Image (cartoon, rainbow, N blue to C red; front, side):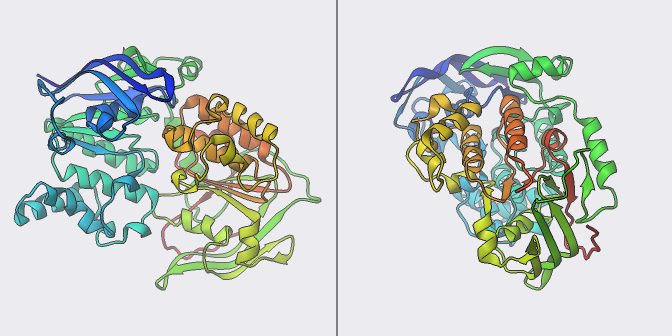
Length: 487
């Protein structure tokens, strides 16, 4: 029996003449795992919103035609709340689905809305905590979680509700390699127990032995269906033309492990790039420490960064990566000193020198058009802004409202703002989450062009492709470990 049927689905916008989804059909059998893949903006997220009924219910500028069936029954006359009894969704931005201030109540909330009795709720939530290894983040403030931890709580809150169809939009965007493997094991168990799973995803390498097929879209249209083996056999050049990420990253993970093994908050050189020693930025952190409630996040006797370097900050979720960059940007109270070319910097001076592309880019999009957004707070000309938008593949969207863009497109808008900022310390927090192959390669090219002796670029990332395409040094972070660092 088909758990899901989409027949001749077309989605159009009142403000765009070209259909967002154009005559798309999909049939998913019960217990099957199907992956929607393709370039950013190809319609993957839109299809998930059609499946869960959010389109057209919550998008009044969009028009939907076609037939949607769940387990043989049309959902045309069903409310979103009725659809939600069968379909659970984990959104690309997990914060958009949180209703509580703490993690425990968030895990319980969905089950309470199903009007389950107390014992059943506790049984389900305890099982979810065990399955997803959430023990260390229960009874925590939602606002104190890392991006990856928020993603795990969002998954847990939906899985606890036991939906028959599970939709996940870019579920690994903010997860480290270990967390991805844990998520994969969870999804394999859910699939084995009869769950139907539909994923929208750019990272495809981890889906071996999980996904039954990959549905490739382009410009809102169905193009082809592939097995994992068929995609794996394609050359990197072919995958690049399709806008798909690499399918074989095993060697890269092994190399990263070799480079960082035994290192904690200690720089490891990755590139052979050399630097002039004169007239360039030097940032020295000495006896630097940050703590939450007397628990140290990091303690660094000395760490030195030289201008022109691109530093990749890596480590498991919750290891302190975001805390570290917030310290460099003057957002955190700290002990110790931070010096720029022998000048001691306080929080205000750090803040003036820094620019950050946030993990959740929705928090830093303020204007009503893309062109106004990238010009906000800069002295750059409109032509300079247009040139940057063109390089990042955003020229045709110049007059669009940022809120109307896909997750990957929003990310590129924030990157464009960073490129125009001319700041000395530039930080990207998971900048490639939601980016397709083409956009990732464009990002790496632009960041390399941005790097100069007068600035430092820090990239917090779990993205193995970014690490080996872009960074010069790796800074591995570990949880709450007192370490001795050499510059």
